[in-house]
Length: 181
Image (cartoon, rainbow, N blue to C red; front, side, top):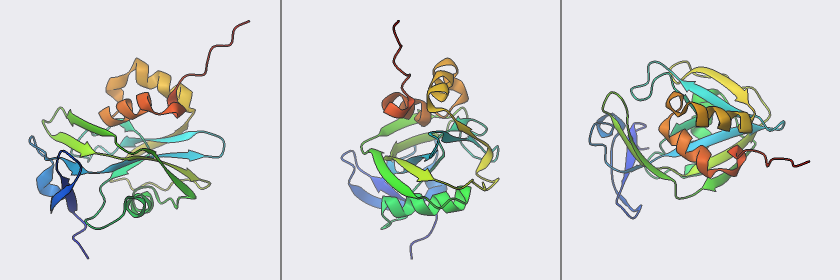
């Protein structure tokens, strides 16, 4: 089995060109690599947002989507999402849907570390409450997605850059149409 700390390196056309230790990849010159983001929703329509642990090397303490991660070399994205849901949030996913296949971003943290990822975005449904790993999650909240969109628009600096970009692309976070009298 591959080392749990390896990530899949990609070329500009999203083709795998190698693997590298996760600990060596995230730097000021982070190579393009494969990741994923997941937005977890429950039956009442609320979405799970998490505040990144203060122990995180990048964007510590900011609010973000439910969870993110990297697939292991040879691991399918759905399997990686399911594995991280259990490890980071203690959640077993009831369903999983690909929402943005080609999402890609590059962002530099205040520490100088760069995220440079091709990062497919998923939606998952759950009917259980999370039990977060404190090394990953400082806080969590179930939020109305439209209220969350207003918060992201008003204070984008309080959220991870990938979540800000994803929220702009995902219909779930679009404001409700105005009702005219």
